[in-house]
Image (cartoon, rainbow, N blue to C red; front, top):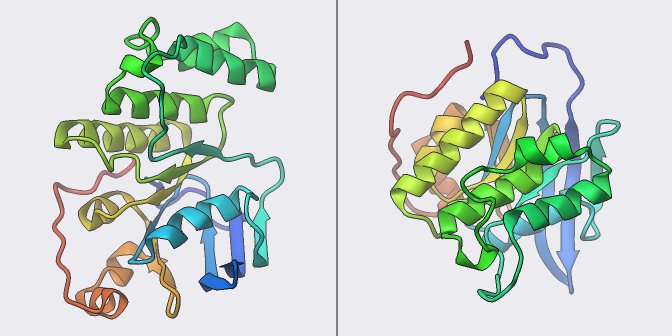
Amino acid sequence: MRDSNAGIGERPLLECRDLAVTLEGRVIFRGLNFTLRTGECLAIVGPNGAGKTVLLRALMGQVPHAGEIHWADTVRPGYVPQKLAVDLLLPLTPRDLLAAKARVLRLAASHLDAALPADLEQRPIGLLSGGQLQKLFLAFALLGDPPVLLVDEPTASLDELAEEQIYERLERLGRERNLAVVLISHDLSVVYRYAENVLCLNRTQPCFGPTRQVLSPAQLEELYGRPLAYYEHRPRPSRP
């Protein structure tokens, strides 16, 4: 997502040093060192499924941690969940949901109108498809124009077409808004296509670096304990 000439010499939006989380005596992860800069996409991959979501929660200050997490001043990341249990009878529309957040942020009505997907406005949330819900979650996270999105496997339960639309929208937003994204994904081909950097997460040998370097066959076999393959759906997008 990132322009190769953008932000040279800038301070990172996020720096994590020797980050570790232990919950109920169990080491979730430790020794994490990584950075995130304006406009970058950082993908979090690896067999430690629970640890990836815990990491996002740690970045949002929701779980105790050791080590250091440094957000740049005034940065408040938006969060896109993997899913949300919704009562099919809930008398709530997408506009109601976004309006509640707009009131908390004290945003003008124009912000709400710009954020609300026109095709979702009048439909009850309980009747939205999986792809429509993810579209709404993304709009909710973007309300208030955060410089960073934390995205937890946004296409885990979607069909291939809806998956492609979500990732294309994330890529377009990154390009248009110079938005940084921390993305949890199990699809290595998607990671290869969109992410500048990758954080491979497990309990013993976490690693961080450029996507093409980290997603080597040897590194993947060491990480997962078996040979893995991925393919590139189509050429990776670049900024003009």
